[in-house]
Length: 522
Image (cartoon, rainbow, N blue to C red; front, side, top):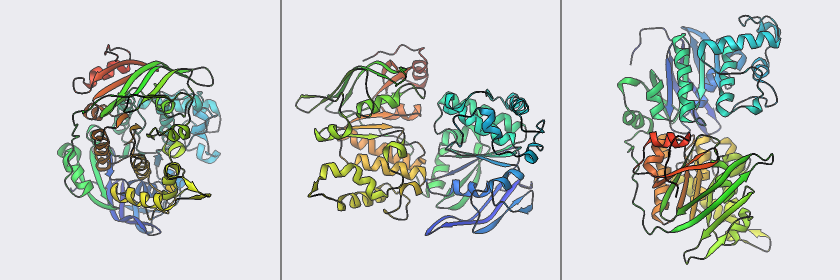
């Protein structure tokens, strides 16, 4: 695809190597003003690394960056800001006890402050005025005086975007901006991005979500294994073509939902109520049954109790009242209330859990892949005279790396050095390898590329066909509708409905998510 205009940014023969890993190899990419460009690729394809070089976090080992046809040197985030480039990272960099305005001006010295329109000195009144001007121009909803600890995820993201605009950025890079947003919040963000585009801003979105690429971008640039594959005009392509280019082969974009077999109760939850230490009710009288050989989807706006529900069942969340019964094959019931994960495991209840917080709760960041496998396997293999079995977790780590195509230098690599998507593969692979009878997953494909996501969907269906009771918390309603046999909808910590996944639609789910529906509870 040719464009006669001079690019706002040209990246020429960009190469970046980390030890034995070639993150980017001779990448050539043109970015034009007044456009929204999606940067698409599998986990570990080098998308974030490439943009980290444009934003001054990394420096290329080879190649050059040009702006408006002239070579530039970007060796720090300050250099990037001086050239009008700002990056909003997937993990926010905000001080929780500061207000929005305090976070936005943090790090700006007097000289830099004078460059900002209407902001000649570092005072909160001037900062708040300029912040409101930016919000009015693009459609943001930010209270400059609100503390970060009182903000939702989408509000924190908004502060990060306003922060780079405040510093005068004309080229904005957003890394997985919708990863933790609801569909409603995503549409609000897209409306803002369209307003920014209309104002002549350039927006680059790193994403895995093809339907969002189609909805928001003008062009899509595709990387594969660190190399640039090509750029497509979004309206002239489709999800299948983009996926094939990204993966390097044809990928089937459909979820084959097998019919449930030998369905019987495995988990029975009755009147479950969970409160925070401050007395705030997160789950209110929640009741449902998770059956063998079935996928029970959990839908709801972010923060409606999904996290607390799975953690309570897993023994990680104290409950105020209610019953959690595990039903064995012979009908015998085991009450799990008050039991921590170790006690649950020692009872022979094979419960696997993929938590939302993959590094804070699921894996230990500084431990390698093999040792993270041992966190789950050592209790079952046990130990003799103080010696722990290390060979089994090593073999398991090798199996997960091979079967889930985890990109890592070795199984001895600390998981903190892996990309977010590869961390998620390690966690999901470990839990499924435990051969559970109950598999609970919170956002199992968050941060995963399309190929890896469908790999996970296939694994979940394999577990279902094995007779596992699967509880799947998801944020993509299309996937929930394709994957789930039944869908439980949470709204404000209450069950607003349980519907048949084959007979409902996104409209009904959306109504139930906002207390406007009337799905049957059962």
